[in-house]
Image (cartoon, rainbow, N blue to C red; front, side):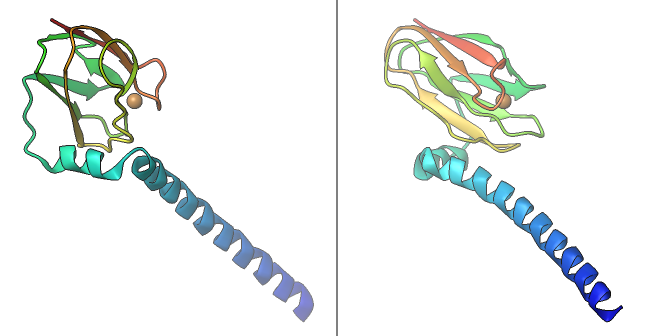
Length: 136
Ligand SMILES: [Cu+2]
C-alpha cells in the first residue's frame, strides 16, 4: 500500500521533472540557435536605433514587401511584427552571405547592401516565407 503510493508519487515527480526539462530544453535551444549564428551581430543590430533606408516588415509569416528594391550602400531594416520568431537568411545573390539568426517577436535586423544584383532570402523557421531584394 505504502509502496504503491510512493511509486505513484515518484512517477508524478518524474513526469513533472520531465515536463520542466522539456520546457527548459526548448527555451535553451532557441537561445543556442540565436547565439551560434552570431550573438554580437544580432544584438548589435537589435539594440541600435531602428533605422533603415529600406524597411521590411515581418507580418503574418510573410515579408512585407516580399520583393523590395534598394540601392548599393542602403541599409535594410527588417522588423518582426509577428508574435513568432523569424530569421532573415540569404540563400543567393551577390555580396556576402548573411543570416540574422533568430529574430524574436518585436526584434529587428539590419543589413547593409554592398553589391548590385538580386538577393534571395528566406526565413529558416518558415521555409515558405521568402523575400527578394533587388539592389540597383
Ligand atoms: Cu519566419
